[in-house]
Image (cartoon, rainbow, N blue to C red):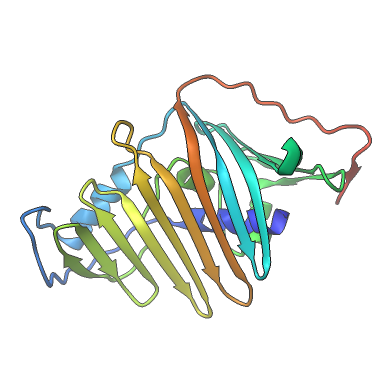
Amino acid sequence: MNKSFGLFFLVAFLSSCGIKKTVTSTSPSVLLKTTSEIISEVNSNRHYPIWLSLNGKATITQNDQNITATIRIKNRKDSIIWISAIGPFGIEIIRAQLTPDSIYFANRINKTYWKKPTSKLRDFVKFEISFYDVQDLITSNLKIIKSNYMLNINELGYYLNSDSASYFINSNYRAQHAKLIDNTKTIELKQELYHKTDGFPRKITLEVHSDQYFKAVINYSKVEFNNAEKIIFEIPDSYNEIK
């Protein structure tokens, strides 16, 4: 199960920016901008609530195995990310906690746990990734990676395409669809069903094609901003530590 959630964090590596302008079509529904202006708008159009609480259902497919779980996520800005996955009959499967310095993970089924420095996230996702990258993913604040892009514009928004990455950016300058290509691995992220009041997506789809297939679809049923949350991460004495 922790491998599935490790893959989930992979997309949080999206960072930095890029430059190149090639406009092939335009529409009065969106403003005509250069690629660098669009990227600057996206990477600066980010909002971090002091507290964010997310509840929803996740369907995870890995190869031929399907897992359905209730997901609870709590994030205190720049401080802590707490995640719990609850399976059938209300039984918690895993609980994880991430801080800028450390990762804590408890497997409720196997009654095991481990603690590692945050730098070890790289061992799970095979990229350099930080607490703040994960926070960007959870808070729907994706950035755009560095590359030379071809730019297309239509009435829906902006499309940036390169050999290694592509994005669809909506008229509100949010990276709604991202696709990364790394040799034999393709990672695709879609954010949908943006709420009219708070602008936060209620549906997230992550799909990974590599030597193994992975897909996660999360539908959030409850999103709360700036309500202080109680965060508990306790390891029972009966649990065995994995070094």
